[in-house]
Image (cartoon, rainbow, N blue to C red):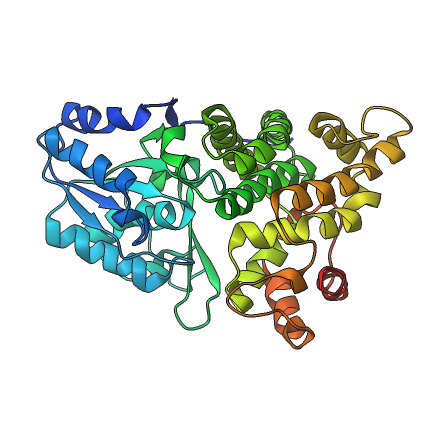
Length: 391
């Protein structure tokens, strides 16, 4: 007999103005000295300064740690732990995109239990246990992509190799999430597109994973439907609050669903971030249609259903095989409509990706856990072919 375990424990306050509830919530909990963890670009914007000001007006003694940028690193997390101790903080408030929220999840752990962030990674040879009693943590997403605010893992990169390491524990889940679409109104179109493709990829890959979790399947399918309709609107009109809210919800749904696991798109994206420092959501966006073409023979029924709910032309009529196949050109069209490059050669990131990168890209992608639950098994040769098709 196989027993499966399911859990959906996070309390979410969702809607315009939800961020205004954070100060009163912390006061009600008897907390006095929160540390706001955010990234250095966001910290200087009015949306962040106004938020910190509201906390102070509630009588809270607030400090801000803004030492996060790019893909979050072990050193950034350790610096956050030091800031927690220096402020003698009693709570952590994560404000930002996936990078800031991933670091925020473990700042309280590092600030109280000590140690180096890398020692808490699940695959560290002498992994440290995360204590049960860690500081109160609330999360406020300012992007609609990773869904880190409802996740139970923190992804941080090694400082020297840039390899992504994962700290995983239900203990680091946010106690409360305040999902306010008004916080995402200022996102530029390019960031909206990249983070939105991340959210869509989470939903798509979770649904296609062969792991058993019907609850996640339902959430992922609806999350994909919402993102398919809302993303082009959010990119085209950054002031559309309804579309922003829809993307924020699709992002959280994708992150909840991927406790079921992900697939080869993410293995490719993790490799691209490691080797070329590529933005995670953008990497997912570039690779998704290439990997879906590879997956098609092993996921016909599910890909046909994705084509239907996403509104792909041809996704509602014809044979199951034809409906499934229509999902791939729909993805290409979506990418073009929101400005995601069709190929890696179209990227203008930190540096170009070339064939010389293939050996390292393949090595990192194959070592990544995510493709273990891809609907079609991936060999090293398969990954090389995927990167070649995407170049």
